[in-house]
Amino acid sequence: MAAHRPSKASSWTSQATRRGCQQPTFHRSLPYKKSLGDTAVKLSTALGSPLDEWQRDAIRDWLAVDPETKRYVHRRCGLAVPRQNGKTLLIEMRIHIGIALGEMILYTAHDYSTVTQLFDRMKGFYGEKARDPEAKYPELNKKVRSVRKGTGKEAIFFSNGAAIYFSTRTKSAKRGFTVDVVIADEAQELNDSHLKAMLSTASAGPRHNPQYIYCGTPPTPESTGTFFQHLRKTVHEKQPDDLCWAEWSLVLDDPRRLEEQIDDEEWWWRTNPALGTRISIETVRSERDTYTEPLSFAQERLCFFMLEIEVEHLISAADWESCTTYDPPAVGVMTVGIKFAPDGSSGSLSICIRPQGGKPYIECIDNRSMSGGASWFERWVVARKDKISEVWVDGKTYAAALAERLSSSGVSSRAVKLPSTADVVAANSMLVDAVSSGAIEHYDQEALADSATLSAKRTIGKDGFGFDSTQTCDATLIESCALAHRAAMTTRRKPGRKAVVR
Image 1 (cartoon, helix red, strand yellow):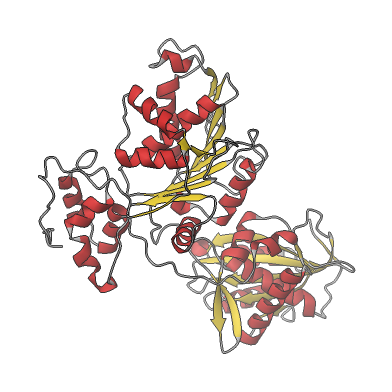
Image 2: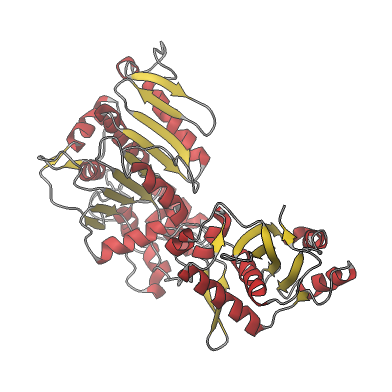
C-alpha cells in the first residue's frame, strides 16, 4: 500500500501543542445536579494520574446521583472510544470511588490478559496483601482485608465491606452471588449469554443501587458479541431513561468515501481525545500505513461502527430456557440426528428420546471439528445400533459416505435416512413450533443454547427455513436436534429393545 498522505493539513494550532477533541462526537445523558465524579477527579490528581477533560466529563456522568435518593442517575453507562485513549484510567477511578463507598464490584473482560492487567494495576495501588510493607500507597493499603490471587479467582476485599472481583466472561461467570456494580470491559465481545449471567449478579446488590458500565470499541468481523452494537443503536435512536452514552467515532457521510475520509487527519483529532498526549500523530500515521484494509483502521483507530445488520433468529432465549429440564427421560424411542456443516468444517450428533408419556427430549451429544473425519460418528452409532430407531444424516460432504459406512458396520439400512430438502424444512419447522409451544425438553447445555438462540434464519426454497451459523455459534448443533426430533416424532421402526440411555 502506498504511504499515507494526509488529505488535509492540520489546523487550529501547531502539531506540537494540539490535543485531540475533548467533546464526544455523540453524547447522551440525563440531567443531574450532583455527581461524585468531582471526588474522582480530585483523587486522580492525588494518585498522580490526573484525568483529561473528556475523562472528567465521563466520570461525572457515571457517578451522577440523585440528591434525595442517593441513587445513580444512570443505571447503565456506555463508552465507545478508540484504543489507548485512557479508558482503563476511567475504569480505575470508578473502582476507587466504589471501594470508598463500600461497593462490591465485578470487573469482567473478554480476554484473561486484560483481566490480569487491571488486577495487577489495582494491586499497585492497594498492595499485594493486607499490611503490605511495600505498598506504594500505605493509606490505601490500610483499607485492604485480603487479596486473593488464585488463577480465575482474583479479588481484593476491603475492611469496609467493599470488594472488587476480576473475571473473564462465561455463561455462568460469578453467577450465584451479588454485587453492586458490573463493569464490562471489551464490551464489543459481550453476547446475550454473558449478559444474562452478569445482570443476575447485580439485580439485587447489597446497596440496592446497581450500575452497569459498558466500555468498548466497534465490533470487528472477528468479534463474537452483538450486545454493545445493539445498545449503541438503541441510545442513538432514543433516550432510555436510565442510560448515559459517550462516543468518539467517525461519522461516514458516504460509504463510497471511506478511504478518503479516514485519510482526513481532522477526523483523527476528532475521534482520539488523547491524540497529542498519550498518542502521537506519528504513531497514527504509522498505523495508517500498516493497515492493509481501510475498514480495519477505521474501526480500530477512528471507532467506526458499521451499520448494524439485523439478524432474524428463529428461537427466542426465553422460549428456549422455558423448555429446560434436569430430569430427562431414561427410557423411550431414541433417534439420532447428525448434521455436517455445508463447508465440512464441523459436525454435530444429537439424540431425541420420545417417552411413552411426556414430552420428547433432545440433547446434543457432541459437536466437533471434522479434521479427523467422520469415524467418531460411525463408532457412536454402531455401539448403540440395537437401541436406535432411526438415524437421520444431513450434509453434502460426509452424509452419503457415513450412511454407507453405517450400513457396512451392521446398522440396518432401514434405520438410516438421508433426508430430502422437504424433510429438513419440516424438521426445522417442527422444532421451532415445539420450542415456542413448550412441547419439548432439553438439558441446559450452553453451546446448544447458543446454537438455538443465536443462529440466523436461513431461507430454504420458497417458503422453508433453516438455521445458519453466525460468528457467535455453530448451527449444526440445533440442526442435528431438529433432525433427531423429526425422526422421533415420525418413526414407526422399533429397534430390538427399548432404548435405555446410559
